[in-house]
Length: 351
Image 1 (cartoon, rainbow, N blue to C red):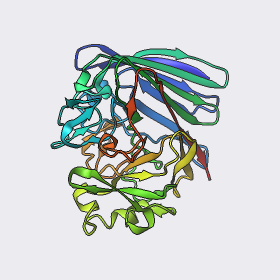
Image 2 (tube, one colour):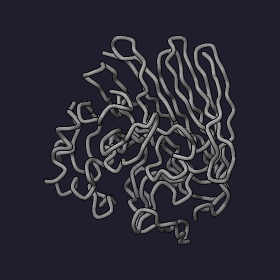
Image 3 (tube, rainbow, N blue to C red):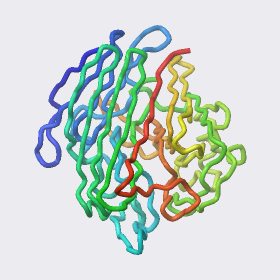
C-alpha cells in the first residue's frame, strides 16, 4: 500500500487543494481531496483485470467549488432535506439556509462539501488511511453547537473503500453525515447507468410530498415502480419517470430506501455492471440509503467527458430525510454527552 499526493488547484478562497491517492498492491486506487473530502477517483478492475475509474468528478478543485450536485463530497452537517429550512430543538427554533426551494439540503449553501479539511495520510501494510478533520463553529449554517468532525477514509488490498464518520458537539444539535459520490461501474466516461443492475435490501421507501419531503409514511418497496427489492436494470426503472407521480417531479429516482436496523451492520445495496462484471456492495450501519440517479448532471468532468442526465448514480447511506420533523424516524439529534459514529464500506469485486 502507498499514498501519493499532487496539487489539485485552488479553492474558492485561493487556498491550494491536495489530492491524496491510496493505491494497493494490485494497482487499484482511490483518490481523495482535502477540499470537501471529495472522492475524485476510484479505479478498480473489471472481470478481465482492466482498471477503470468508476467515479465521476473533475480534474481541478475549481469544478467542485461550483458543483451544485456535491459531487464526491462529504455532506454535513445534515445530509438530505430539512423541510422549510427550519427546526425546533429543546424549545428553540433554528432557521437554516433554504438552498433547495424552500427546504434546506445537505447542510445548507456552504456545507461541509465546500470546506477545507485538515488531512493526515497514514500508510499501512494492508490498508491505507486518510484522516480528515474539521471544526464547525457554533451557529455554522444555523446549526447549534461547535461540532468536531473526523472522517476516516480507508482503502485496502481487497478493493474496499471504507468511510468512518465521528462527531462530537458542545450543544444539542443535528448530524447526518454521508458521502455524495456518483458511481458508474461501466466507467465514469460511459454514457449512462441505464444498463447497471441495482438491488436495495430494504423493506420500504419513504413516501414523499412536494420537494421530496417525506410524508412520514413508509411504503413497501414492491408497491412502487422505483422499487429495487430484486435486481433490476436501472434503465427499466427510469422508463417510468414520465408516468409515475413521484418519479416525474423528481426527474428519475431520488428516494430514501428504509432498511431500518439503525446501528446494525448490513448490506443495504448492490450495484452490478453486466458489461464489465464489476460489482459494488454497500455495507453500512445506517438505516437508510438515498438512491439518486443523477438526473440533473449537465457538466464537463474529468478528461473533458460530458456528464449528462443519468451519467452516474449516488448511494448515500443516511438516517432518513427530514427526520427532525418525523419522531418515528431514526433520530438525527446529537447531544454533548454522545459521540456520533457511523461506518459505510463500498466493496468492489467482479463476477
